[in-house]
Image (cartoon, rainbow, N blue to C red; front, side, top):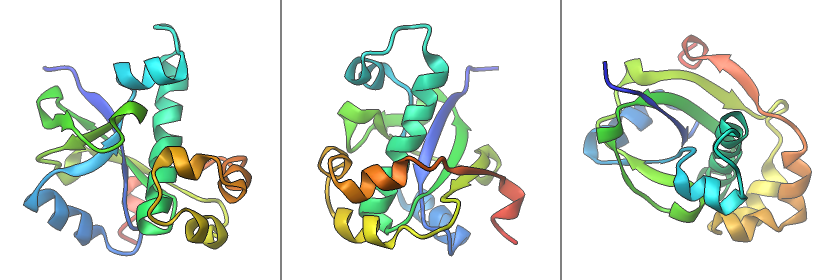
Length: 153
């Protein structure tokens, strides 16, 4: 079996179907612990766990800038499903052919109160948003893990 790659996909919480519609019509933006992310953050080869966590956090910030919320799906995809994407210097990739069975979990804000951060960061790049005090305040709270079955409930 081919090696799988963990990707973090920013999405909207409200409608699972929206993600599948986007995935069917083309690639979806995601973040992964690739060489660009390791280089950008100065991580060594033995820092895989830190790099995966960084990809999750970067995806959550991108979600704030694009969707107004930190809602991130994690999926295991084949290397052939990954292409260059936006925010490449931050581990950004495009995922093609995403299937529901590849999504393994999702992460949300603990209190879902990210309005100030979302308002301040709307439309910015990750690097621009990262510097905002509203984002810094939000990022001190870890995202909460959820089993993927909870999304459709």
